[in-house]
Image (cartoon, rainbow over all chains, first blue to last red):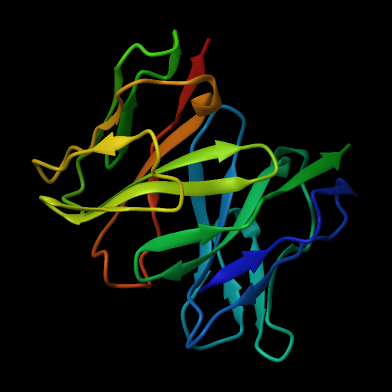
Amino acid sequence: AQSVAQPEDQVNVAEGNPLTVKCTYSVSGNPYLFWYVQYPNRGLQFLLKYITGDNLVKGSYGFEAEFNKSQTSFHLKKPSALVSDSALYFCAVRDPSDMRFGAGTRLTVKP
Amino acid sequence: EAQVTQNPRYLITVTGKKLTVTCSQNMNHEYMSWYRQDPGLGLRQIYYSMNVEVTDKGDVPEGYKVSRKEKRNFPLILESPSPNQTSLYFCASSLGGTVFNYGYTFGSGTRLTVV
């Protein structure tokens, strides 16, 4: 079965610093990987996806993610964090009947 | 505006009193799904529907029912709610359930408390 894991419950960074939110995956076949963000009292919003092609995927709000097949990772990155990036981030993998989510990583960006 | 609409946003009910959470999408999506979100567990799928009149169980279907009589609507029914169903619920839809490169559009969520 397809699955993803987010090894960190919480990530803290200072505003202006680069941020990384980690995700590793376990799939059979080609991975279809996604990142979503959840702001307080809101539903999840799509950030970006990897289907095939370039290993560096660019998405919304200045986020990007790097697909690494040898390390089975799909880490979310941003060169310069904003306080407004503080939210809950979910990595996910698509399978035939579901989008399987990680447990989530809470990102806090401090001024 | 393309969206998934859930109602109600907040609901407090008592054990055993039947309730329905509605979900409607205006994007003509074939695929719809219900999730519950609990701290430390991420999102877990309750039921999904590949198309009208086609529904199937997800990872945590016990205590829930769904129906898909029309393409746009996918209500979640709790026949006899119990306190362990206290959770945050999300409805999601996607274009083409068998096409893997589509992401999901989520509703704003329903926070259910069963006392």
